[in-house]
Every structure is written in structure tokens, then in C-alpha cells.
Amino acid sequence: MFHQARKCSPRPVALAAGRARWKDINLERYGTQVTETAGFWMSFHELTGGYPWLTKRVARVMGHEASLPRRNRWAGVLVAMVPYGGRIGGAGVMILYFYIIFFIIMVGLPIYRDQLPRLRAHFMYGETAMARSALEDYYINNHDVPASLAQIGQKDHLDNGKTLTLNDYNMAITVTSHNRSMFITPRINKEKHISWYCTPGPGMQAAQMPATCVNGGH
Picture (cartoon, rainbow, N blue to C red):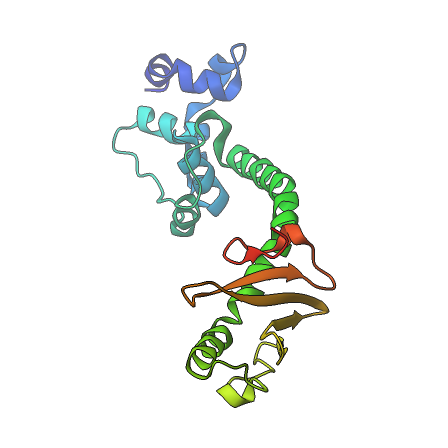
């Protein structure tokens, strides 16, 4: 049986021992190494590599009824989060992941830094929505500007730390957040429709003004 097994399995044995020494390998002893393939990383490598360990292939050639150990179940959980790597295996895929994440960070971080001030300005403008709506209703009904935000039931200190200040002369709102300020000024047209225009205050620039608030400089 020993000689028959060697003749029937030159490829897996050659892969294990090399082209020069595969004929001298003890197949029976090599096949017993199959018990070591049940470990976590051994199972992970086998699942991501797409082929069984050579010891399993030799053990099956030596005896078709050979009992093979079950793979580690936790390795299967990790493999579910790792795409098939083919010849590069699981370790190769993890390295590839690292380079992809590194590339995303290097490219995305400058973009994020550039867009962050605009996002901050957008949220600052959104925080004034209720105050602007209340001011519009008050002005339309009274043809005047309220003396304070409290008069129309609005807070000047918001729960998130932002502050709102009302100019009781032109009904402009100043919203301030972390030493950055934005001026939001109303303009009324012939149809009595009020539009709000944004201009940057301390710590902000005109290019950061949100698109939903027409830049007062235009």
C-alpha cells in the first residue's frame, strides 16, 4: 500500500517535499500530521486559500475512509469577513486590506478637512430654522421686529452649546459656535416673502457659507 500511495499522489507530495525529495518521504508519517490542521489559524488559512492542506490530501489518498479533523468554528466566523484571496491566502488579503484602508485615509482625510468647515456652517444655519420661522410669522403679523428671541418663544442659548443673538433693528440673527460666527440677515421682496442671506463672521469664510443660505455678498 505504501508504494501504491506514492504512485497515486506525486503532485501533493511533490508540493510538500519538493521535486527532488518527494520520492523519499514517509507518506504514513506525513499523513498523521493531518491532526494538526484543526487549529484556528490552520483552519483560517485553509478556508481563505481555497484548497485543503496537503496532509489531508495525502491522508485521503492513503485511505479513502480516513477521518479528517473538523476545522475550527471560530476561524469560519473570521473568514466570513474576509473575501476569498485565492493564491495570496488570508494573510495576503489582510495586507491588501491594510493598503486599501491606508489609501482611503490618505485621500479622504484632506477632503474631509476641506469639507468640515462647510458642514459646520450648514449645521449652524440649520440651528436657526425655528427662530427664523418664528421671526417671519411675527414680522408678517405685526409688521415689526421683536425686541428679543424670548418674545417669540425662542432660546438664545441652545442645548448643543450654540448661541443665537437677535438684532432688533434689522432682524438679523448671529449664530455662534466655538468662536465661529455667522450672520443671517433677512430680505423681504415685493410679494412679502422673506429670504435669508448668510455672511461670515469671525472664524469663518465666505466660501464656507451653505448653499441653502444665499451668500449676502452676491
